[in-house]
Image 1: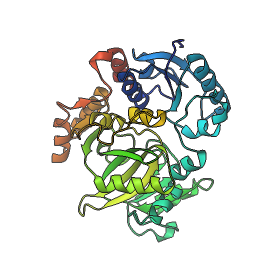
Image 2: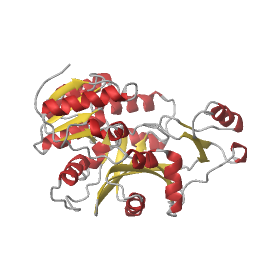
Image 3: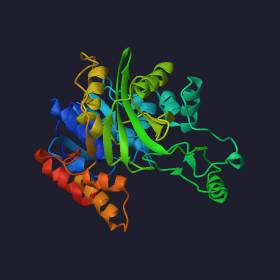
Length: 363
């Protein structure tokens, strides 16, 4: 699948739901947006807002071919900027391959890896005095179960496990000899995610609490929250390394004490982008404004609190999963009933083809 329209911004690895939110955001502000992805099986390829669509090589399996393809697409489309939704480090490492004058608003590979690698991000947060779960240098020291086992890299909760005993942890460690990992205490609570744009002296960030899933994976049910302390903590991390661009940060908030714990940074768009946009933080357009030198305002809109689901399809799946159980806790009942009347952040009446595709295919 391909189309040859001219565009202002070319989005890479943008076929899925996160890319679709970026597409809608920028198109809503009058920009002509093209999308490319290593698969055409994504809702952005069904959207009427994409003026250009193309299938690219995989940035993971063929990074050089991917960069050459993006460079060619940027040149032929007349794009002012190229914006990767995922794997920003691939294009950052090959920045010189892009046509002269094309903007790539992502940081250096070194800064991206410093934040993306969970070990180095935790070290950075610790140096700034930001609270974290207790970490274990030796698996034999773990004395509280379940524990949390994390591979140092992974997207959407992949590589995160919750071993319930020493044998399960030992099995995970034995399978990870070739890669780094972290072992930490499990905090009984909820995840709060902060997404930000920092560009020079400008900084803006907003937060949401993950309601579903409760443990790991891309969020499908979220609630906007005000979290000034966590927003400030992320700012201190980004200021420390003079990071310019977008970044997300995950925290765990203890249900009993209310204390927050740093978990990881993600120097890319987050799976909860729809919640941020719905709450007044239009992160993709803010990044466009910052990187292209347009006027910026830290108070672009007032905070809007609300619960947002990832899609109507996910909402129905959640309801089905909950009601198939023989018994439900009161919290689960409220989660199901609370779905009615929420905003579905990737299902829009003005772009039904994309929304129906997401509903049917989960993409």
